[in-house]
Length: 356
Image (cartoon, rainbow, N blue to C red; front, side, top):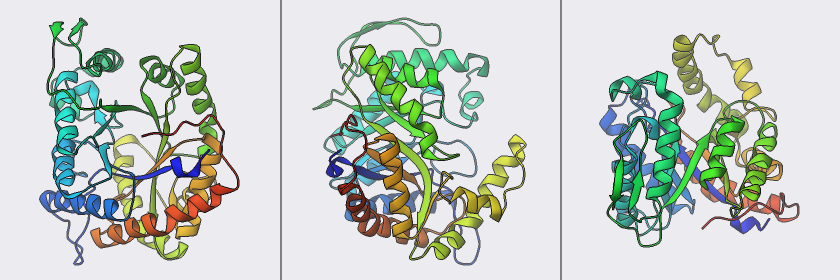
């Protein structure tokens, strides 16, 4: 693998963070901070900035395309996308239209990562039945694949009105880049290959090496379906500071707070420092530490999976905007060149494709 084809990106859910006095920031200020974070990510040479979609009080962003459009006006090179767009509770035609518009505003830098999401608040909010969870995503993903051709679409299904020779606008100049986010289901991996989307592996538990069978299955499925090899990206949480200890101390409180909030809803055990230290270790899914520690873990992931992009999810819980900016700067100026150096003499699997 040519290490120059490896892209480092960032994802954020717009977690509500705290001001220096300990008070929670407003949703509005959090959204403005996210735009500033995207601007800095562009300035330090990162390749991608993804914004999640959620509909709950922990996260400020419900309309990522609008946030990304604001970022597009203030950035030059970085690609801008979602992490993820909850396609099951949205309309594929409107999703296409919004991202085609974002692609125009950003001069071809828009990307959409489609997924079912890890929360279900959007289903009752927009009038969808959770009993249709699987069918909603299957049908809408199929329809979106037709829309990506930018030709008139004829389609019918059970979850939305049929289309007959429907032409959808605006047209893009070079096509829209689309991915599917997968949490670790073989069926989801095969479906992603069947429709010809790029694959984003959301690794939020355990070591990245455990996901090698999914990367292999995806590449094998593409080959068996007669489709060209497509890129694989990895999404995992992380935070960078000058030393491991500083990064751990800065990240722990927010990570624990978020885990415990969600855990109370889902029946998880209380999150503690021992669990955190496992998660940031070699067998955990969190990339938290000094630039060298984080770079070493990213390089190990690339060697294990052959992914051509890594998306570090920042802003877990209440970590401050100032610390996030510092983390982004270190990620772009220190981690990125270290990863390239570490991979220069030991390549990941040769069949890992690059991305534009």
